[in-house]
Amino acid sequence: MAESHETEISKGVEMSRDLRKYMKDTNVRLVGGALLMLFVVGLGLIWVIYGFGAAVMGFLCILGAMVPVALIFFFLNLSDWILKRAGRNED
Image (tube, rainbow, N blue to C red; front, side):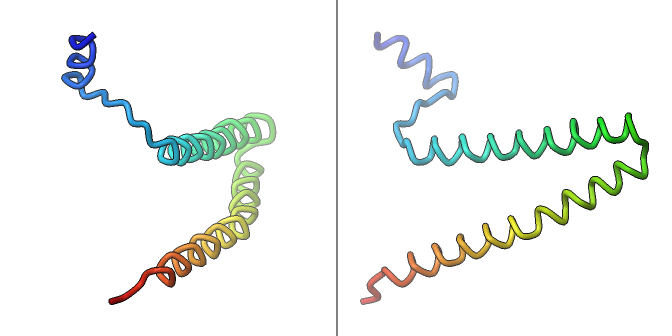
């Protein structure tokens, strides 16, 4: 059993028990994969079926839809950062 643990460390694979980091990494991968599929598959199909002009318009529409989402994400993270800094005791 000790040999298997040593081989995992020697291969550079170290299992972490930090579930919050795992959840954050998983969420980032899910969002990244969804955006990749949206842009590549969605716009690719629009391009194939309707042509280049429609794909450009679809791209602009997707970017327009992402602006409010990005602003909400930005302000939520900003408020989280402010609240974390306000909770610190400066001695």
